[in-house]
Image (cartoon, rainbow, N blue to C red; front, side):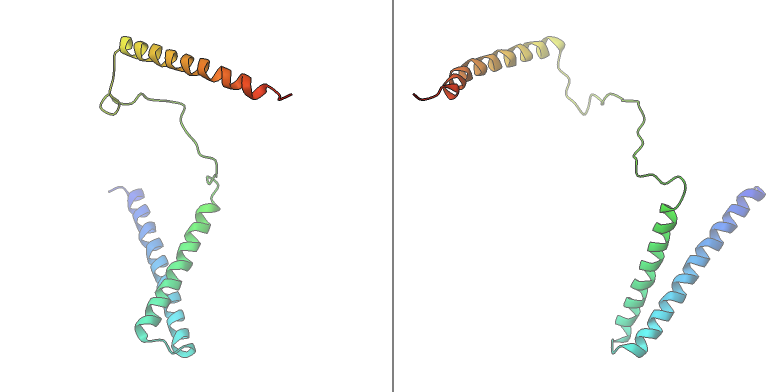
Length: 127
């Protein structure tokens, strides 16, 4: 291994040990507090202390992540749009597509003609 990779691994181990150690300390403090301040069973105190510790560590990680310089609430997308695979979308021929669109156009024109008399009646006023 290169010395730089070993140094990075060492820093990762130290970071994880620090986080785990802080979690154990916070959980121990919460457990001790609950031992004197409440009448909870030991198992309930343990789960409450672990939950508080996990929540505090989670909030700390979220806070660190949000305060980084690269954090942004604007989503970034590439300008490249790739076509879908043929397996996802069933392909039809161009002639069939044009025939279907012509049929749809005729249907829409028929509906538009049927709706014109109804529109003319709505616009009339009763004398």
